[in-house]
Each structure stands twice: as C-alpha cells, then as structure tokens.
Image (cartoon, rainbow, N blue to C red; front, side):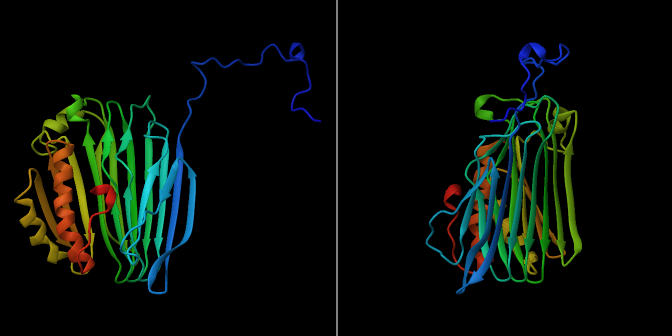
Length: 296
C-alpha cells in the first residue's frame, strides 16, 4: 500500500497554506460536443460523436430519416464567468443535419471573468446544415463572449441564427451592467465572406436606449442564409416581416442573406423567428418541413 504523504500531520510544515472557503477557486463548467456526419445508403448518418463535461447531444426520433436532428444539451443548467462551451460540427459531402438546443441558454452573473461559447462548423460540398439554437438569456452582470466560425465549400448551404434576450421581462429584470461580444466569421472555399462582431463592454443602458443601437429592444437575433441563391429569400423575409411585432432588416450579398431582428421582449422575438423559419426552411429544403420539435 502506498500513500501520497506518509508524514504525520504534526510533521507537516507550519507554513503550509490553508485555503478558506472564501479563497478556494470556484468550480467551473466546461463542455464540448463534436459531431460528424457522413452519407450512407442515400441517408445522413452519424460518423463521429464526442461529448465532454456539461456538453451533451441527443438525436430524437423523427419522421424524415433523410434529415436527422441533433439537440444540444447543457447539463450544467446555465453558464457563468469562467465557464466554457465549445462545439465542433462537420458535414461530409451531400449530408444534412439540423442542430437545435434543448432549452434557452442562460448566462448568469459573473464575478469578473468571461463566459466563452465557440463553434467551429465545416460544411463540405453540397451539404446542408441548420444551426438553430434557442435563445440565450443574459442576466445582470453577465459577461459573454461567443464566436461562430463557419467554413463553407462549393454548393454547401447554411441556415443559422443566434438570438439573445436581455433579461426576462416577465420577471421584471432590467439589466444595467452587461458585457457581450457576439461574432460570426464565415468563409467559402477559404475566402472570408463576412465578419460580424456585436460588442458592448460598458454603458449598456445608453446603448439600450439609443435609437441608433438597440432602441429599447429587449431581444435581438441575427438570422443567416448561406446559399448561391440567397438573394431569392430577401422578398420572402420582408413580406413576413410586415406581419411581425418586431423590427426586421434584411439584405443579401456574396451569397449571404443577413437578417437582423429587434423585438420588445423574448416572446415577440420567438414568434418572429418561428414565422420566418416556417416560411424559409421549406423553400431552402425544397419541400415542406416541420419545425424541430424543441421549437414547436
């Protein structure tokens, strides 16, 4: 039998540091999910799955076997300063996949450090990914840094969104101290098509009230389509926008459709995103498709 320390307690150095509850390091959550899809028998199949820490993924039973769904899960129930979550997704040629989230991601109060969320997405030739996480809810004194890196190849297509809610209106949450850095980098065949970075490090209330910034919107989203025919969706999104209780702006360039949504609260944002998704997804898929079950 061996022991890490065979000395009696009385023989230990008197200068040995003693950690108090106040000085002990805080427990951190860390998660990672890796998903790779390949084509077999004319259907998309999982070829690689890796899960670590609080990052988990489930594949629900669906009617359309040719278009599988993956649901991301954070078993920690939320993230705070110092926590990290990373995703790595790769689709081999001609494969399809829809990725959504089990629930809204919650970013809680931080003691100063940042919550990091990162995604690496690689889409091979003629593959099609839907990246549809549910909303991210920020709490007072939260610190979030999120970056999605997307690498497209010839003929690959992407439908993606990120939605953020600045406090829960129904709970009377009025955020005054929030930091967020939310970015996208999208390449096609190694060429950078789009780099976007929404960043707030201080004066959140001033930015919230400013007509040139959030204009008192308590929820926002970025909705993207990467497709060679992306400009064909502009009129569709604008027509749907006239029916929504939200402000929507959309444009298309370089094979990208970029849509911004500002809403008065998370509920209005959710309804707006659902309406846009219902119209756009079927056109992009080339046939009627239902919303992922978690979105219904």
